[in-house]
Image (cartoon, rainbow, N blue to C red; front, side, top):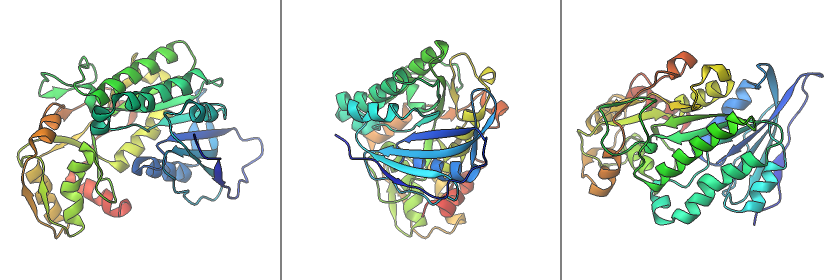
Length: 338
């Protein structure tokens, strides 16, 4: 079951007659959801499906964990704490009639492998329920993943490579892309999916996720702690900063539907780096912790099964691109993550 709604309301004075939009962020307590909420508050507006700019009247952060409510000066920011595997909680969210849904919530790779049934309920069923209960044709922006690709991969993976997921998590992401494309075709939603590479750098304590094990290679030394990298020093990995992801999600939301591919899904271009290059960037950026290399075969095998160079033909036309270098990813963390 879920807790009663909690909310913090601020000065909600918005110009009379302005069109308004209410936003739901699932996974709103996570590091990505929190950065997205702050960016939306700073922007103040989003573009509706009709192409008009609308003031953001409210943002709801939904998560199983209590989400922080960022301060704002003109928007109601609210918390809904509950489990997305609970149909009653999802239905209660759907009943609120959001104009925009950013669906970020999911159980990640290791969790999904350990509990596929619960992962399906959170990763797939919650999105399906939100879509099928929609009555206002909301815009739905979904964070898909590089994990939809697997098997024998070319050196460079673009938007149109056939997905062959090799993890439960990747399969769930691929299912959701199809759900979004189909429901958009039927006119129930205006959906779009962005496939993320490894997102760095997650702040806070270490987490049991593949992406966080990679993030720790830079995070711990920047916090003055030594670390043994679980990946070989010469293994290339595709990465992107949290800031780039947030910017891309908002750009994707605001993009006209005619600028999207028929499948309504494409890759967020990544910066490809090795552990040794991360090590050099940490030194340049003032990290005092040491990085050594002690590969974890199981984790390295998962990462080796993902694309190494992640590109897109669609993204540049929407102003979406990779970070310039790993120094920029560390700078994004230092500016926002600690």
